Image (cartoon, rainbow, N blue to C red):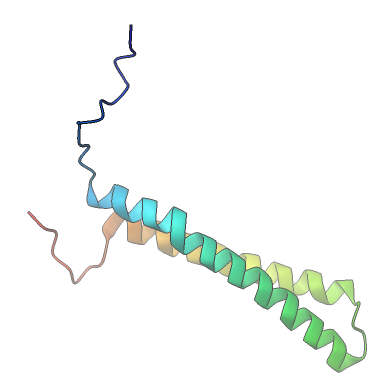
Length: 94
């Protein structure tokens, strides 16, 4: 017997705009932002350390990482609001 929750290959599943935006945000946007934030953080911390003459200053790295996580938190809150409400100037399709 097959499970009643399994989808058949011919069935199409309709998704709401919220689900579409959430999927895009979690799969594409968040990955790009996390990767670029980590790379930028490490590069800025390294450059800051080199300019100060302390290329291995872990305190500088930790400060930059804290800033990056603060920006990521703000981005995630904004992304969640966007997932819930969408673009305010676009009307939903019927």
